[in-house]
Length: 114
Image (cartoon, helix red, strand yellow):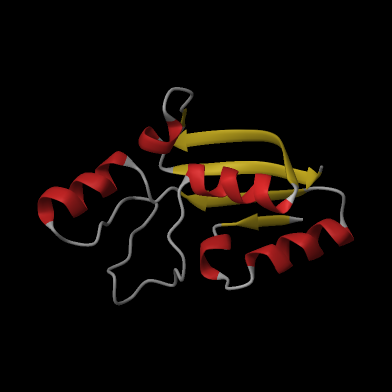
């Protein structure tokens, strides 16, 4: 099962992931990284809710109900017993290996049960 650009828009994340893994042995999860440096700078120095290529909405028009970072999702997986088999961090066409929580626009995780 693939949950791409949707995890930040659902309320019962643990339930959805648990059900996806009940149906299949693995799930691919992709989401925008809200801790991306440009988003941080926009909030810090501009004083406004950020807009980035992966977060192209104004605060009043966003479908997002949660604002998560790569680190948040990794902690969530560890806490809830989801095994991260693979992770990829992206900025456009580039793969980000160094400080992805700060430098990546988005993340893709391959999950299974621990």
